[in-house]
Amino acid sequence: MNREPPFTDPATPADDIDHQASAWFALFHGATPTAEQREAWAAWMAADVRHAQAYAELENLWAASALLIPPAAVATPAPARLSRRRFVGMGLAASAAVASASAGLFWLKGMDTPFADLSTAVGERRIARLPDGSTVEMAGHTAMNLDFSPTRRVVELLQGQAFFMVRPSSAGPFAVVSRAGEVRCSEAEFSLSCHADAAQVAVHRHRVQVLAATQQTELDEGLALRFSPRATGDIQRAELEQVLAWRSGRLVFFNEPLQSVVEELQRWREGRIFIMDKQLAARRVSLILNLEQPEQMLDVLSRALAVRTARYTELVTLLYPAA
Image (cartoon, rainbow, N blue to C red; front, side, top):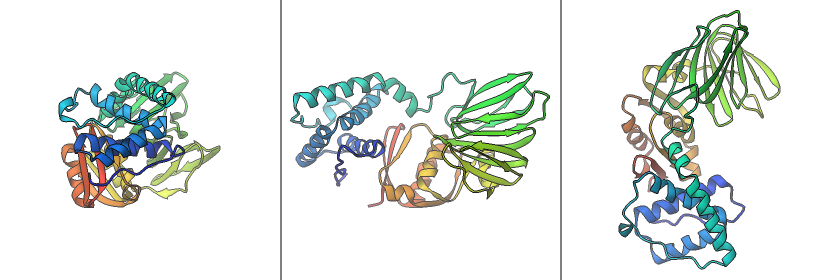
């Protein structure tokens, strides 16, 4: 990598710090840094304890995966000139990173909900029959908890995407609860997809109710809605062939930001993808990917966008604008 990662000040948001830590990590593990780059790295590490913590987490995730390059083969960064206070702070950050290394490795491999009632691994599809006779089809890296009784039927969607085929029942309404809000129906077929605390529902048959952001929205067949705890979007026509393409082994994207495409890919291939440029993350993408060939997804994406990829085992991939 010829260009140094940019500097940040202590007020830099955590997401930007993580991206910069990834760039420094790629430099020291994928190239031979210059003396100037070593000095810049030391200054960046010393500028904020969060910088040291983010970099230490990457180092310890690398070590925890047992995939480290032998120490003799890796360029050793020059030690930073730090005050005692800064040195102690970095030590505490590194200790915290060591404690979280195992959890971080599970995160990299998509195994971060081991105790869910129903779950799928990255790249796995699964159809399950629910206690009330309804059916759920789960996309990759999806997890949910079930709460069913003679008078209650509630699914907590922890993460991922699922297609629900809900049958009517004397137990009452069927509800799917997520961090974004709640989807409720008596009988319906619908898809629900979650990213962090935002969600999108698309109705295939019948009607659902969406309860989010202190309001209730009725959603009829063929319509879609994005929602979160803060806001409910406008009702849109559901692009069902695109939304449900994963059920037939494809991913279809039309004019989607690359960041959204990458978030979707995380469900279908192990490891994490980091976009190292904000303009690149916002670039619009239209393409079709084959779920039966997950190892080729990034190659197809790279050719379609003319982006540059830096892969560090199958667990970490960095995306840069083409030179």
